[in-house]
Length: 402
Image 1 (cartoon, rainbow, N blue to C red):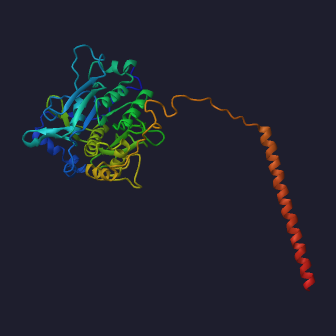
Image 2 (cartoon, rainbow, N blue to C red):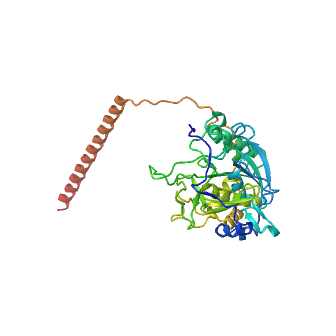
């Protein structure tokens, strides 16, 4: 039986392989995303050069022609789940990596997938298995794999990642994951994660369930929009959602030089990670909270009132996000010095003092209530006496004048 904390790819219900699509037709399939994110304008400022984006996923095919030369193979935290000799499929991870940093191929890179940050590099960190892999059930039921996401985050930070993309979700959080996220943020790393794809379920309480790691404080939680830039039916809605991005009919790369079309908050998350990479390329010292602010402030298609739990502050726009980042450059929201909090420890320092129990003494409450009532009655009596005396004085003065 799968544990409730199992880590899975945040793909929506549909994932279609399209190996028959010619590479020079792929770019046309990306046109809507390129225009929605206003990438042509953003690329006049930066294309993400010098930034390392860690893709915590099922692994990346570094030989795909649209990613060749941009992928660094990192650690596999799922080792031992699959039987010996089984080769990872790396479908989902390759797909996400291409949306973030695909550089196309052919003359001037005009063919194939172009990512949001085509000059960025990718660090592949394997923390999930594809559903079809033989070790999938073992991976999602064995306790030894419980904290692979936390370990993957710390590894990516130590390997120099500037942005960590997590197009993955799970229902339960762990203390180790929370600590790893604090560690990443303290090191200036931007974390982006999928809000989840349970939005089509019958929901109690008026919102979809929270998904982790997206719901952790400090993580940019991303929802998916449809072609009309409204919340996609499958996308979770709750107060963790910060921004959204296109997540329906998104074309990306698959292993073996194939191309895929799919939907999910996974795709939306990868697109937002690409925009975060553009910001970090232009402003490498910008703190994660300020990057998140630039993403949210620069969003378009904002909901009425400026925010809602469906699409957050709106749909991410790369050009506007860079403009907002320029206004924030030079500021910081990170504590420094001896008084800065140790990110590896809980906010209370890890030591909880004794809980002071206050007993409600009903007899004392009754006594003081009676005293207060008597005092109130006395005050009213005094006011009545003063009122009578004032009237007598006025009558006496009136008689003398007559």
